Length: 119
Image (cartoon, rainbow, N blue to C red; front, side):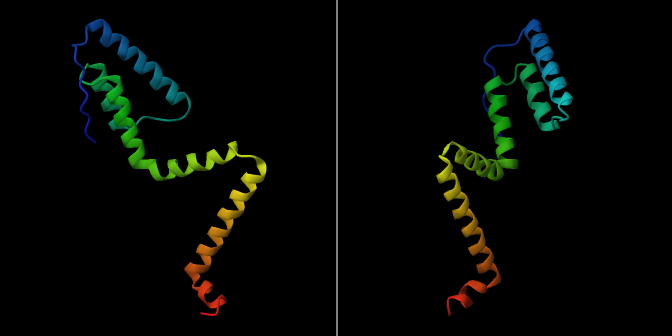
């Protein structure tokens, strides 16, 4: 992970204190929800507080970490969520299609598909 966007202007003590306060409040909120930030993310925020990174750079770096860890799963989930905007009959058609593709994949994996087609 390479973060290139560096803050252009030095951060004053007052701004550093404000950034620290905002970070600590956000961290407390995350912990109240039962989660914890990993050390890489905490390090990014420390660099933001010190003025080394912009907030946009922190966001991009977190997105990159998140995508690397959860990307394929999250992309599939987003696609699946898009089904909910379809009319009900189209939603059912998508579910039938996915079910048939899964069944065909299972048959292919077991080697049964070729046998049923007389091959």
